[in-house]
Image (cartoon, rainbow, N blue to C red; front, side, top):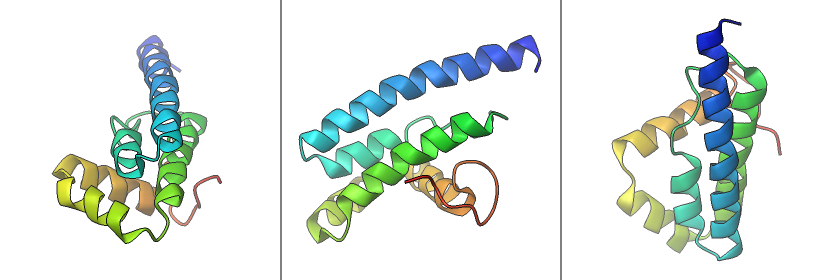
Length: 107
């Protein structure tokens, strides 16, 4: 791994740790739509570190699972979704976060 990649992955890892804590706090507060929005922020799609991508996908998965079938939470999220949020959600759903088709996000 080149030094630039290691620096980038270290920055992604630090940001992911902050995002995990923020998402967990939002979920505990019952703010599921905000938790999903936060989970989708700055995913490490450009990283080549599969473990990092899996951790990021797990954060998104926790937020989606917390919403479940609560129509009001889904409506709240999708009423305010940005194109970047939608793009990140589709990439996570398609790639499982790790860039490998057909792979399920860890649960």
